[in-house]
View 1 (cartoon, one colour):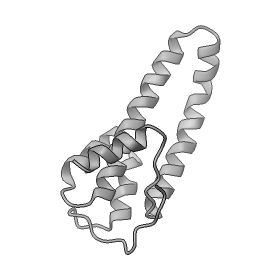
View 2 (spheres, rainbow, N blue to C red; view 1 turned 90 degrees about the vertical axis):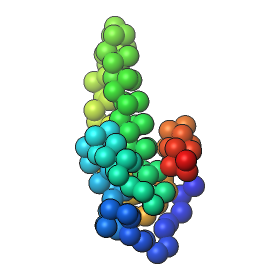
View 3 (cartoon, helix red, strand yellow; view 1 turned 180 degrees about the vertical axis):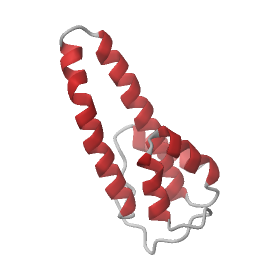
Length: 116
């Protein structure tokens, strides 16, 4: 699901939905938790906040797993920060543009949590 919000409304936090959604990615799971808990109305903000939490946890776990696998894991772990940074920029931009940008698996989970 990659459609735009039309029009972008206000979140219950008093800021535009796209700004709140983008800010939920700024500090990973920390801002994700803050926005997920504090947002009461906007499913768009809650979706991106939950996706921020889920991707942060997934990257942390993946980094740990790759770190304990000799040689191949270490090589892949070397590139994980670069891949994470690129993904972070993409998620920030897509959320600021008002798109429901779903990552595989994590996006579906995030949508389910936002709709509860």
